[in-house]
Image (cartoon, rainbow, N blue to C red; front, top):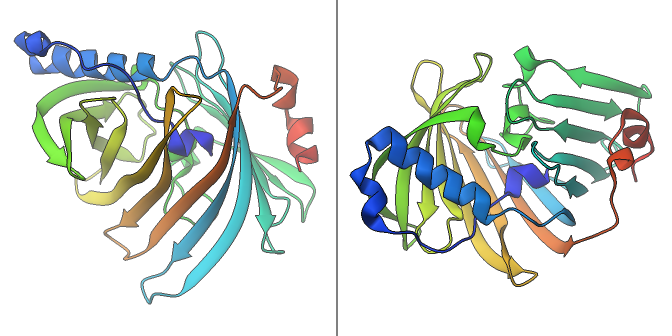
Length: 259
């Protein structure tokens, strides 16, 4: 789940990059954003997921998660459900890759089984939320092609507005529009367009804090589905960085033992 909250930090770079074509400029911004958030190594957090249906009925779930940076690759992450009782012990794990499809698994304690999520199913909803399985992956630069659109204010922040197109043919999205904060390169908003190029969802980041004097994290993320009238909010807390994690903490056996 950490990957649902990965944000970008860094120094604003020269406006001279806009001398490039829009595609090159968009790539330059995306690369700067990714590099700005490198180096956190490992982290953990707690979060509360609030699901709201089109009638305003609310379901609340409590979770916690762990993440590990992998050199020259995407991140590894694990999210474990703590409450309510019907989902307690359910755990998901994602290995993000810079190229090719990500590896994802879901442990279902009711049947004591680890289920692999196939690439053809990654556009499906994660545990009934408005976040898709592919939204859980860290957003590696290589996963998209880019185009700079314009400068635009979002959430009261001056932003670079980029369009990005998924490289994967199994993505549930035709394109995304992303707004990166000009001062620190953290994302402020993402619009997701379905395969028919209709607006599907909007993800808004808010209540940012800086951790370890370096890494920006949004304490609230809200995903609104414009087509079904549902929304999912994530409230994050208790961030810790540089915790004791190794590769062996992210295996199918570790997923089954996760607490």
